[in-house]
Length: 403
Image (cartoon, rainbow, N blue to C red; front, side, top):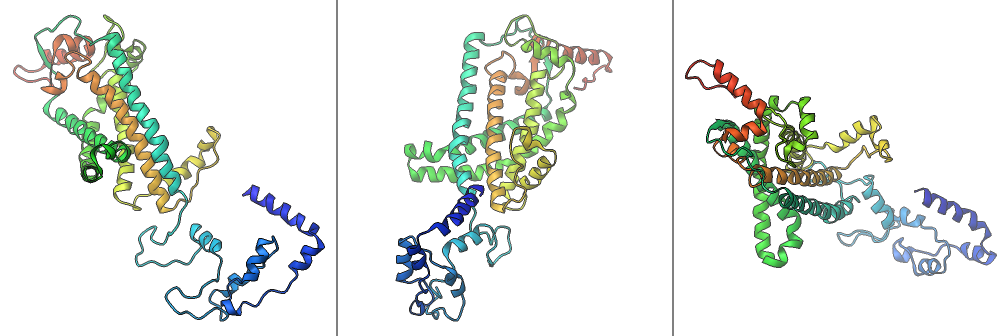
């Protein structure tokens, strides 16, 4: 806007220096527009082509005025207010628009953030999101080549200890299964148009995309239910502890043998996974709900107000964030944020799946039948084993110690 003001100022200063001939031509009487119903004439067009000034006040005055041509069809009077003024009013919400319904955004006929959202979705989101997924897979392959499968150093003890009960395993698999379905269907919707349609054909992709959308929308409820269950089942066990710092400094014993640091039921790495899933899962659920119920759950405008009040944008050299957002802009931001957080979760969960399955001997049993080898438990969760064994000694005979 400042650039345009400067240009207008320069233009205004330069007008008095125009030649006398041009000024004389500018002073020519305005042509008679009665034959055009108040619209511009051939003389107007010729003057504009010669770089002469044309007073376009007639375009504004003609709208709805008696000088306008009579309406002969549904289009009404031709000419009238200039198109730029009309589009400007529509863009900034100053036009008097009515609609047959009162839903949010019903009278918004034009908004200029859709292109930016589409370019972000088809550009940085897909590009950097794809790189992140491939990068994590590459790191895990490299880790496997250098470290190999993490084995039970003392060998299997042949004795089992219960790690997770049936309810815990149900909550975990409900969360894991729903997230995998959400991740696959989300990636199909995001990448499928450019990555699958050429391979399987338009009709097949159309069916696949429709099914993916239905699955994504409905499985999301199972994900949110499981997220709540997992939180209440394990939150107390995942409260950070000072010993977690020791575990992190030693890398959890993942990069070297005979150096497993002591840990409770959940080590520091698992706690990081837990809190990442809870925080990111809550965030992706919130943005997902905003997309499931269009225009009903605006959240970014209020969030931007709070961030501006504490000066957060200035911390990274940004201008204050916009606090007045159209309903469509809210939806576009929800869609973009949903994709960003989803990619972050997928990257984290890929690493979690590897360690919990083929990356570590005996790890899958924890969520398989809930029983893990005693030596595995002592190596990775020694403090928890001591706790369970102490409870077993003090428990009444025949009773099962609580987890």
